[in-house]
Image (tube, rainbow, N blue to C red):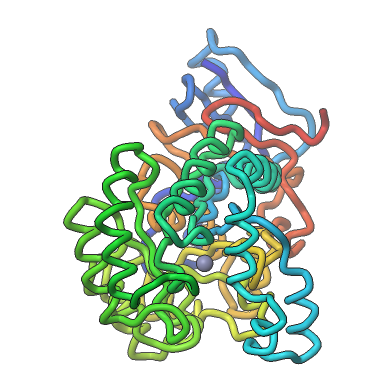
Amino acid sequence: MQLIGPFKQLIPMSGLSIKGAISDDDLLVFEDAGLLIDGAHIKAIGKFDELKVTYGHAEIHVLKGDHTCLPGFIDSHTHICFGGSRATDYALRNSGKTYLEIAKAGGGIWDTVTQTRKASQEQLVKKTTKLANRHMKNGVTTLEVKSGYGLSVSEELKMLRAIQEANRGTSTDLISTCLAAHMLPKDYQGDATEYLMEIADTLFPILQQEELTHRIDAFIEDSAFSEEEIRPYFQRATNMGFDITVHADQFSTGGSAVAIACGAISADHLEASTPTEIALLAQSDVIATALPGASLGLGCSFTPARKILDAGGALAIASDHNPGSAPMGDLLTQAAILGAFEKLSNAEVLAGITFRAAAALNLTDRGQLKEGALADFILFHTSDYKEILYNQGNFKPCVVFKKGVKVFDKHQ
Ligand SMILES: [Zn+2]
């Protein structure tokens, strides 16, 4: 066993509701705290001095200076497995070119599909591992990664195998998701329904045989798939035991209703959600996930996070890190910015990137510091947790622990 501390503050993010608004007054703050770890899990939390007496036989690590301890961050929505770059698209878009003009110039999502198909599995593993390690150093100890730039059975398999291999090469946990329903591939000889049924018939069984993922995602939008096309696809997935997540209500509404009807774990984006969608989401068990990185990348409005929380919804915040609309990939910065624009409390922002993000991935063993949870935690060099979001992302963790092992230390 290891005892680590003392922390000026330890914010366990426990005892808070999964849904609805949270005030900073609701946050538990342990002062002069210690964390007792047994292997990969947390054994106890309490006053450092008291733990030292009770667990005198533990290996004791005394920290110098002021530190605040939080659960490791969880980024529940990314697309960091890809080939190429979309820097030219980004410049064109910011020069006022339209989506169609960019697509005609050879850009857009199809460009990423082409570049990802050209890349070898090894190249994708290398790139994904590198980006995952960058997130880890920024305090992200669990990171979702989607496929969706392969768009054929073999190319989607290449991506998901690359994500699986990258997971072995990084200390952060990569949670993979199959997004073969990202868009109808331009080169597919058939309609959307035929494509989706081919994926369900051929790809889904292999995903289970190789244990490549237990999560199926789809993009419901005018430019991607309709509600009618996706419902039977999700039905197939749920019948086979997959968890469902949806790209919903980004530019037009409809996706969130499918998410609710299909029992999705989360509905992500929601920039276009109106009070009707917000009320229905809030009444459901679906986690609403805001993706401020996409709003920043596209220059669009943010997900109505305040309204979702006030209606009683569960709000997670993720980076949507992808080469097209969200190239920054900095969860803490984006969550802090969303908080400032949407008037979210520290507690609500931190919940969105810890235990509520864990719920968006259907994970119950992380996102809170409590007995039995994974010992995934991060330290900031401050005596006041409010400094973290106040610095709007420019204040990063100095130490990252994953499953009880120190995997990053800025001072070393
Ligand atoms: Zn996305």
